[in-house]
Image (cartoon, rainbow, N blue to C red; front, side, top):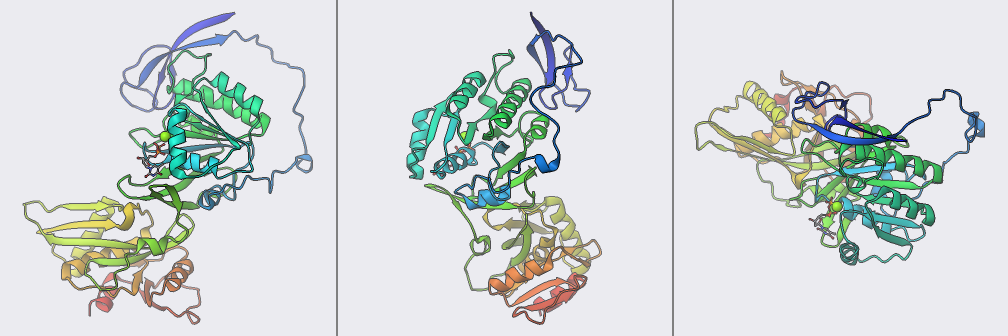
Length: 452
Ligand code: TYD
Ligand code: MG
């Protein structure tokens, strides 16, 4: 017998309540409760079941999935996943609208000619997908397309076709008949994902789920979705710029340190295998206000240009603005500059910009940021063959940074002649290096060396 029950579910955290609440008692959000009707089959509660199917096994008897990974035609994608797509795994690909999730998924599907792929979309019509594929200019006869939003139909088609890879664009458009709430609601997303998960594991089909991101920047649907899937990938970037970064926030089959960099072109996404060369403008004239930082994002070292502009404030309160760098950290560095370099901030506007619209989280960028600001303020250019790596502390000390050898090696590879690093980074050999390594323990030491 089917029993109908109505519950209220918080759309933010997924907590359920028998009655409507204005404020969620778990996550504290207001107005997030939505009524959802659940049809639950009455369970015949039985504690003992007959053993069938799965048996406990020793590690030795479990068949390994090593080397069976599906290698995607996009190397940056393989790198982020840790070597390719694991059969039977569930990958959640999230990102802001318009960032290029559908493009990435389509390019991935079309770039695997020797695999059977089913690409289902609830967002775009088949004609729209075809138009996009024509733009990408790749032809693949082993990839089938389907416009479907019903979970039951979707699973039936997949069961019949038995593809190696199933792509669902997007999980928020899929809905199941067993739940009466609207597509995209927390319980629909959760129920559909768990059904797809069971189906994928049973049939050894890898699934890529595309997911939307909420206003707050988390993947829509509660965190519970992230627990269910094997891998959570985030596609990010500034839509006004062409660079896109693919990160993994969770990966059961590889590290989460890897990162893939792409460029959005008129004919689709192009991989960037050597980011440093792209992210430094090729002007050889020294201009004031720029400094090169040797950063590490993910597991990859690259050099990036930091630009600063310091000008006299036209209005009472000076402006502080930054693109790609944390504003609070910028304010802290400005305070350090005021204290340690006699930099008078009161009448100055400060603008900071990281090249290519890329967001940098590596604290080792601090030294380059502080040097670029001072360079702009003094209107003295920093030699374009110099680069910097170092975290700046509140007293103006330069703190040690991680993986300094990798940073130095990347700077050397790109032909830089001098790198400023923290004195505290010890224990590596600089004798064989062509690049001059300058160690400093305080920011004023660095200033004296570059602005003589
Ligand atoms: P899309 O993949 O539709 O984004 P999402 O699925 O994440 O919402 O891509 C959106 C943007 O990408 C769109 O605004 C146009 C741009 N784009 C290109 O610049 N070049 C291309 O070849 C394609 C297909 C899209
Ligand atoms: Mg899309």
